[in-house]
Image 1 (cartoon, rainbow, N blue to C red):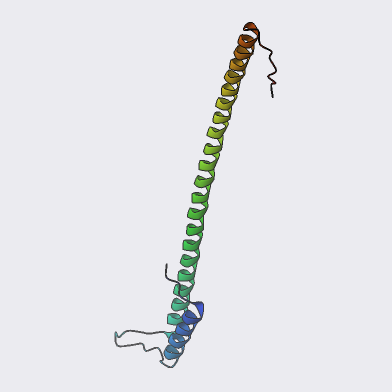
Image 2 (cartoon, one colour):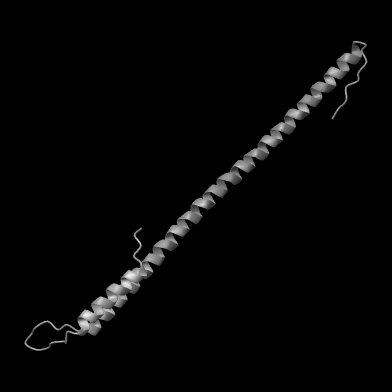
Length: 120
């Protein structure tokens, strides 16, 4: 996106306005009529329209950046939710290890050994 400094636009507008102010409007004979004050107003409107378009483009860029950040945040949320699933899997793994611990303790007792295993 090309930015045109407002100072440059104002300077151009002033030059065009002053150059046209010295030229009177000519009417008659079917020739072209040039009105410098009307021309200056038209230039002002164009400068204003360009400035408004520039603001609209900047707003659109901000909207796209905000949408990209929202997508990134949603992706992180999905990763967090899938992380919760892995926590549940870890809980199942711990339960199976605890069951294995009980089997080992029972086996040691049956073999006549002393069980001094502690559970955390």
